[in-house]
Amino acid sequence: MKLGQKKSSIAGFTLIEVLLATIVLCGALVALTSSWSGTIFSFKRSEKVQIITSLLKSKVAELEIKYSKLGYESIPESEDGDFGKEFPDLSWKAEVKKLEFPDLTSLIITQNKNGTDEMTLSIVKQMTDYFSKNIKEIRVTVIWQVNSKKHADFSETNYIANYAGGLPSNLGGGH
Image (cartoon, rainbow, N blue to C red; front, side, top):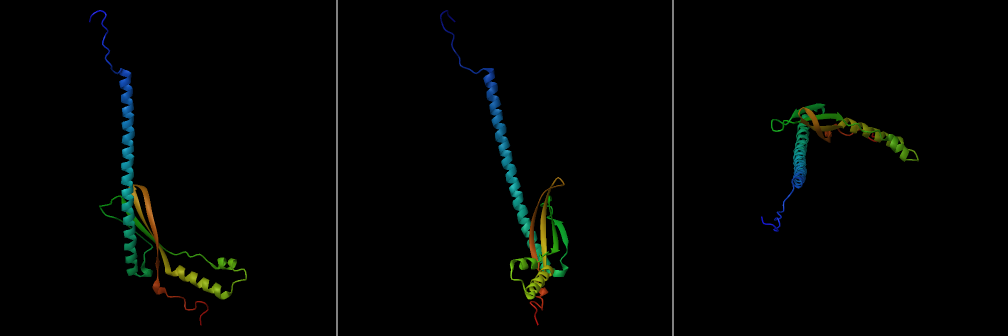
């Protein structure tokens, strides 16, 4: 280098600038990776929920057909099982109980300010008894277990009617 000649200025980055750029880049990569993993987790969960919903609907239909062939009085109070090796983390249970039909006579009496006749109250009472005796509630639940811990359960409730029960013969004070 000769005297009077300027030193060439080479543009470059300092060590601190390189470190800051690396930190910013790493932060962006971490945020992007966690966003992707959250999206993948959400996708897998929604896929599993869709499978569970399909299995639940299928099991409800299967049990309705099975119970219709058994006869109303032979329907078990509870039943359970699994979905085989294909879905080892899923199981199901069915609970059957008689329909608890509310007593409507007090509602009819309060709505009719002129008074309610005995025949109307008798009809309502007989129909309430009829429905309570001839309709069963079936609740089917699919249980999703992850590492032997219940993760979630999904249920559907349907009703089974005893069509052979017949209407009360003295409905409405019949003759």
